[in-house]
Length: 495
Image (tube, rainbow, N blue to C red; front, top):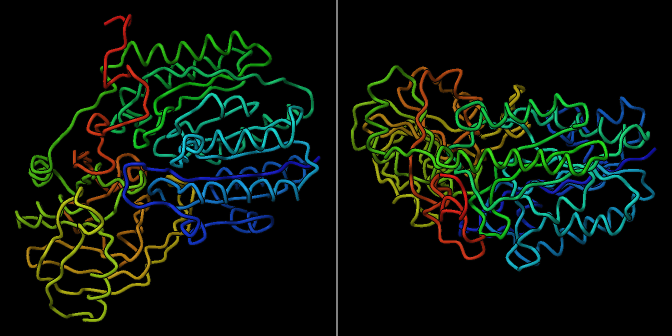
């Protein structure tokens, strides 16, 4: 038997001013055929599990297509068209196939009406190409905005069960097992989704914390029913102005659609019954820094408004400004600023100069921090991390990096590439030790936690403004459903 593998992964933040083009994918990852195997074989990603699981099952893995790029703005329509063309061409060349393992992110979005649900668009085209008899098993990120079109295109859809995402390989193996049993005629997977007009704020999407933990425990109890093959909580991605934006649930049964729908509805009923708990709580920059200075350190301040993993600028300065203004603690922050990085590099280690750092992408994440600095060290910016981290990757690239310290004791890592801080390597690979700082700033909400929590006794999520504000009510949407909670109350719900 031959099973194809297709993947398209991007979180499209429609509130970002930086469009995503085909060159964005070419810069990061645009692969076909055996290139996909070479990239993921032996790794921690779900695609790694697809390859490994099929090999263990003595099923021929046929890598077809993979494209991914760092979360950023809306994918241009021209790029959407090109990606779909590449997927379908590669699929045609790989056929005949007995099944497909697909890995859309679930939050890929273009600007035109059809492409706003880009994953539903390309999945439905793949389904049309291969016909109804070929099983398609799908693995998505829980930060997906699930659409009915996505559900209809696949026989089964599985979302990661962890945020930070540290179970990607496990979910990949689950998908392989489900496909294998389907191909052997042991099961007939049927999935149903519940798609309420409801969204969980990003700050409340930690899967091991209240209020999501009881919801996941409820989902786990459903799996005790032998008729249930799998289920998933889809937390949603509020940084996309699309009709499907929101939280949802999927249940897969063995040929029992009514049970699947009832159980999916039960999960979303829990969300709605506890909707006030999912709105979130918010701490200002000033209060967060003040609190962090007085706590046992190091303290990780999570910069929610400049959440790089959600598509933000990566050059937000608001927390850096406050630490610098106070001048009473040792702090560390990573800021994307190729120009300032190059200035520091040209000046050389040991040099003193005035730099204008960060705040250059837009006016949403704070003004540039202007300060006298000393250049401490220079680095190429690439490193490896073999630990299981959010995203399932082991190789990281910050680009050429300059480390500087201000006269008030704030250490700034100036990078030439945007970087999601899911590995402590953003600190340790440049010769620094977390224990030497009272405050470590990580630009994220949940993604950095797996790496930073082991070394930080305390973490504080900071309510910074920006293109990834944790409070979705601060964004102006044009395409979301109405009424929708937490923007409006939904009629006929119990209080």
